[in-house]
Every structure is written in C-alpha cells, then in structure tokens.
Image 1 (cartoon, rainbow, N blue to C red):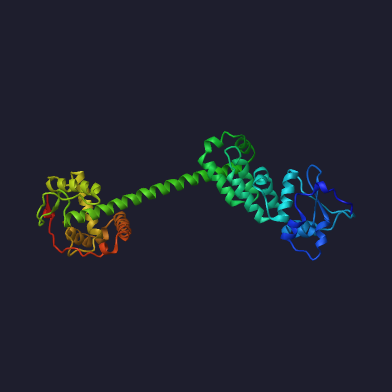
Image 2: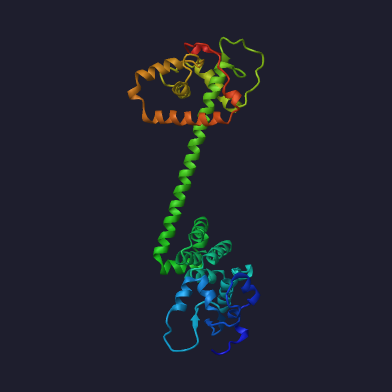
Amino acid sequence: MEEFNNTAFPTISGDLMSDHFQFSDQDSLTKPDVEILTSNGLRIPAHTGILALVSPVLENVIERPPKHRSSEKTIPILGVPCEAVSAFIQFLYSSRCSEEELEKYGIHLLALSHVYLVPQLKHRCSKAVGQRLTIENVVDVLQLARLCDSPDLYLKCMRILSSNFKAVEKTEGWKFMHENDPFLELEILQFIDEAESRKMRTRRHREEQRLYMELSEAMECLEHICTEGCTTVGPCDLEPSKKRDPCDKFSICEGLQLLIKHFANCKNRVNGKCSRCKRMWQLLRLHSSICDQTDSCRVPLCRQFKLKMQLEKKGVETLWRLLVKKVASARAMSSLSLPKRKREEPRETMHDHGIRNFRL
C-alpha cells in the first residue's frame, strides 16, 4: 500500500484512540488500512477495525469483496462537506463532537449518523439541530427529520410550524415544499388541525372543571349559610349577631346570599317565571343529589328533593346525573386538600322542613 499523506488525517491523536479502543497489536493504529474519499477528493486514512466496530454499515462495506483487484481499500462518503466527513470519522474514533462542529455541520452529521447507523451521534445531532431551529430552516429540517427517522426533531419542527404557520408560509422552504411535496404539506396541515382540536378540547375541559369546582364551592357555601350563617343571611334558629365576619369564600358566598334573599321574597319562584329563582331551585336540587346527610342536613328542602328524585328515579335526565357526578367528584377532590381534622368535624343535627329556615 502506498504511504498516505499525513495532511489528510483528521485531528485525532494516537493516544486518544488508544484511550477509547484496545487492540492486541498497538502498531495497527499507526498503519491505516483504508481511505475515506470525500466529495472534494480529500482522502482520510482510517482503520477498518475501528470503523467496523462502531458502524455496522461500514462493517458490511469493509467486508464486501472489492470489484477491482487492488491493494488499496477506499470507502467513498460523498454529498457532504469534507469537514463534516472529517468530524464524523473523528467521532467514530473518540465519541466526541464539539459544539462548533455541531453548529456548522449538524445537519450533515445527522444524515451521516442515520445512514451509517451511529445512534449516539444521531441523538446528539438531533438535539443540536433542534436547538437551532428557525422560521427559515424549519421546513428543510422537517424533511430531513422524516428522512432520518428522528421523531423528537420531527415533533419539534411540527410544533414550531403550528405556532408560526403564517410566518413559515412566506419562506422559500415552504414554497418549494408546496410545489414539490404535496403529501408533506397535507401532513403538516393535518397536524395543525389536530393541534387546534386538542387545544379546544383542553380549553373546554378546563372550563368544565372550573364550572364544576364553582358549583362544588357553591354547595359548600350553601351548607355554610344554612348551618352557621354568613354576614347577612343565616338559619332562622340562630340568634343574629350584629356583625358576622366574611368567610374564606365570600366572593361566592355573597352572590349566593343575594340569590337566597331574592328567592325568599320573590312571588314568582313557584310558577317558574323568574330565572333567578330557577337557578336557586337548581342549586337546592343539586345539593340534595350529592348530600349524604339527609337526616341531619340543614339545607331547606333537601329531604323533599331526595324523596321526589327517588319517586322519579327512572325519569332522571342523563345530563343531570352526569352533572351530579362531576360536581361530587370536584367536591371530593376539594375536600382532599383540606386538613384531616377539618374533614372529620361532625355536623350539627337539626331537621328542616321548608324554605323559611333562613333568617334574613
């Protein structure tokens, strides 16, 4: 074999290779037995033992019988800059790659690591390229991520596309992809549509949970008003004090007190002509549906509603049962956040028979 030109060696010292690989014949490191041919004609000397050990693809190439009778072995790695090939060979020897090399040749190294099955380098390149994504290059990187089977990088590109679609749509990369790859364009649009649908479902779920939590707090305030009283409204058997301090949930409790005052004095609360009274009837019915202290409950009409629902059990609306279930669940979750001593406090016992249990 002819003597190789030392200027073509990548920047890898023999000591560094000895630290990472062990050979029975140490002199084999000083005698490269294969050349890596790059696009500009540069030849990088290497060792078949190291290449075959790190890359199964290069191992197959090395073991393949040569087409021409020659003592020289050459492995062409074309289509990428020679500096990227040099950094790739250096990684095969040392398992190291500088941040500067990743910044300059990250895309090329990602392609090489995928083609030659070097997963450690592929993971590092995917992460480095993902950190340097921009509006201008995101479409090109997305195409590369698909070709190189890099799901993390693919998902990151899709999220950037979804968040900045109007800006990406004006780039040259998008225009080229629009003209030459309609399937990828359809894939992107479907991802954006699914992402918007997920956002809407999440937003709707949060709003529903907030509503259930507010209803659960309203149930607690209703029991609090009917048991202890709060500021201006309380049970009729409790002596009114000159001044009651607001409770912890006074923002909800105050609105409920105003509703109770209106309900107690409204002439249209029975015939269903008053929307505010309808709301109060619904709150009383909801309380009765989730109350588990029927005999000792001090909320007006709790027992009457429960008896009525038992008689009309088959006709109870599905949506109403679902609402009761959701509010009861929210109430249970809320009670778990309370101190154990407060959860175990017994309720006072007092029977109620009508709406006149309030003192206004």
